[in-house]
Length: 263
Image 1 (cartoon, helix red, strand yellow):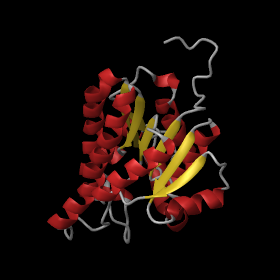
Image 2: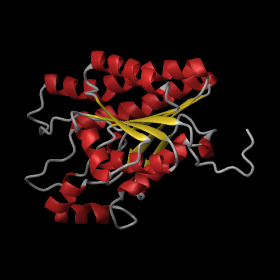
Image 3: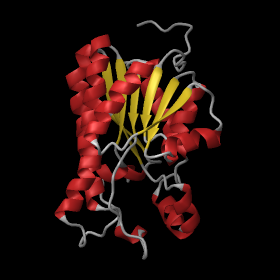
Image 4: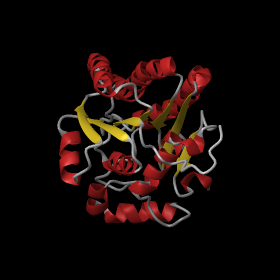
């Protein structure tokens, strides 16, 4: 490939689906990708996506869809319906996750299975459904989302009552996503489809920042950069992995954590 005199981040003419696009990090991704010219399908639970689009007053290159990724039958239906409307996407971003918010000792087997169905099984199913369609066109890029807690265990000292430390089922699921990205990269590599993973570090959402300022301060001190991350700092990495600036990067876990896992 030769990219001389081209803007490698220009995504005009490309379609990207963002699962979990109305969440804290998802919103930043949708907004940035839209500004780069991509046609975005923002997908989330209930009316979250449509409410986000209305609130943010995004341009008409962003559309909203409703999906519970844990409902596998609904996933198949949405893939078919949206492809009929928008064609096979050039990019897929999956920020979805599941959690029970239960403590280690109150978590039961059904809870564990529920979370990892929504986190691992649903991620696999959507990636395969869309990846196989991308393979027919010999192009595509997928970005999955793990977490620093897919690589390291939460430090209990950071969490004070009534907060609970990050739950075991979440971390186990996120560790699985890192391996899934590697597997998908190899499986789809000869079809010119790339698959990478992003592992965010401390990116507490605005509600957590407002309700637990002491917690945010403790998180900040744990980072070598002395602060938590901003949502735009995730969006930039997503745009990079979907763009022509990263055409030889696949099977990687990009850690965006301000150095959290470096010490």
